[in-house]
Amino acid sequence: MGKLAGSVCILTGCMVLLACWMERMKRSRQCMQEIVRFLSSWEYSLQIRQMRVPEFLAVYPYTMPELRLVADEVREGLLSHAYPTGQRVWEEVIEKHRSALGLPEEAYQILMRAADGFFGSNSRQAQQCIQVCIRMLEGVIEEEQKNYREKRRVYMPVGMLTGVMIVILLI
Image (cartoon, rainbow, N blue to C red; front, side):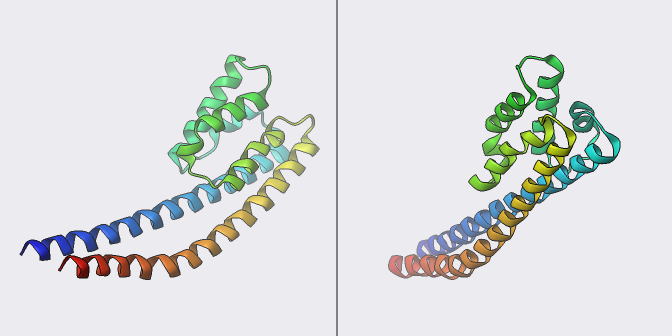
């Protein structure tokens, strides 16, 4: 009876680990897609409405609490004038919340570079920077989806096979 219970626990553990990995990958992809929407909305606001950054950060309809937290801190830092430049505020807050956002390194670097699109010297340069960041981030999303599919094809069977092998060894 103990071996059966142990076997069930091992197989369940393997399935939970695989599910956690899949959820983390999905969350990362969702965060990157939300950042693309965020940057696209900023580009539109910059082009059509000529909004200021703190105003935009306050009215944007966030769907991810992590991104809202980052935006709120950037907004507070801008309004408090605690930093010499807006770019510095952006970079420090993004660095602080790097693990909460769960972005791959490439996406993180692109998000850091997006500061030029928020705090550039003129609106034309800012729009161009945002467009480049959006294209680059979309490329990272496609690459991550491809990697996810490839890894899932390997991880699922190997994970379950490992669990079964451990069960066989214990019995």
